[in-house]
Image (cartoon, rainbow, N blue to C red; front, side):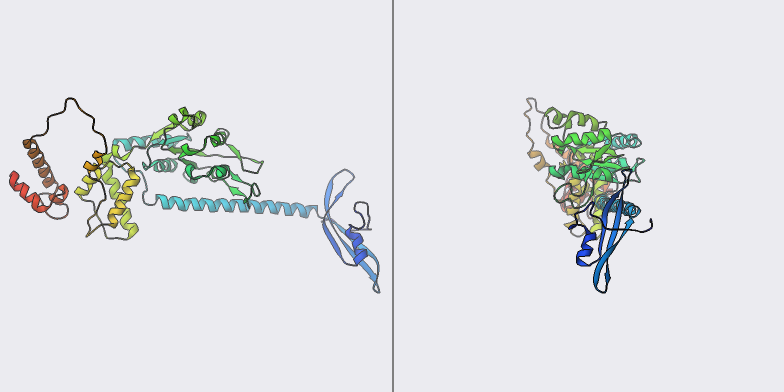
Amino acid sequence: MPPSTTATPTAATNPHHDCPIYAAFRDGAVHQVDTEVFWRRDGSAFHVEYTSTPIRDRGRLLGAVIVFRDISQRREADERLRRALAEVDSLRERLELENAYLREEIREGGHHQGIIGRSPAIEATLRQIDLVAGTDATVLVTGESGTGKELIARAIHEASRRRDRPLIRVNCAAIPRELFESEFFGHARGAFTGALRDRVGRFDLADGGTLFLDEVGEIPLDLQGKLLRVLQERQFERVGEERTRAVDVRLVAATNRDLKAEVKRGRFREDLYFRLNVFPIAAVPLRERPEDIPLIAQHFLRGVVKRLNIPELRLTEGDVRRLTRYDWPGNVRELENIIERAAILAVRGRLRFDLPEPEATAAVHPVAFDPQPTAPATEADRRAKARADIVAALALAQGRIFGTGGAAEILGLKPTTLASRIKVLGIRRR
């Protein structure tokens, strides 16, 4: 710090009634100022603080001593400290948000750790994931609600080079229109009423990682251009801030809408659609892969038993038959809910499923008139089918009729009724 200097008071820059130097003469008090700026002959400025101290002799005010100090270095150090603290606050907020997202991901993904199934449809999906995961290509996952589109996005992220950075999920349908820019890009303090501090946006949080835009078809048309700009330029500005920020984000989008049809109706930008549809993956509905239902149901059942801390439960052959006959309009999400409800309603270790019967499901679909109907089954046909079903059930149950896993349970019949039919049909049990 430069050495202190003394100076006599002057009114060159301040009227005497406003000057703290003259104030020391008037009230005899010490006055200190640290907001003064002095100018050099070369036109440069530097910050100065000064103290005006009155001089007294036997109670009489004789004058004042004014001490000036150059505080430019201290002001610069204070400014650097302020910027560093602001950066620390920003990083702290980012870490807090990342931790919050991580906790949310753990809660949402904790009872379904991966894509389950052995059907050809699932194997084809896994091959697509392996192909695209090693690249940074944008992926568009389409499919009905509840088909596991988020699981596909998570699998792509975990198999990519970005796996050590966060996967940030954004539910586009849940963001109010007026908060879209703030949620996606963040905002600076004071950008609008209620913006009491800087906010980190989702793109900032996903920097270096993956951004999963769920229900991307729900973004309002007038806001889709803002998203397109960031995807094209990989740059954005926070609301209320002029600084342009670069971002490195891998994008995975998902929708249950037909975006191509939405483009034709004028509800979705064609250029954004092409930007998202670089590598499309279709999530297959559950009714098109019934062979995966037992595996998924057993997985959910194990999770429910552990989570609810209830006695061990098992799926019977009869349970599996009921589950595979159902159409599952709500897909995997509906199956999970049905399994949890059946576990809660279980009686003496037997799951109780609240599912409509196949006949009730079929009744809601109109039946087309066939001008050349097939011949109805004869009594002999019905007896042959019943005999074949019973033989198959006995084979699965290793000849047992009664008890858990017995043929009666598999067929959904009373054991006494099944025993009577076996006798009538002349079936020999092993």
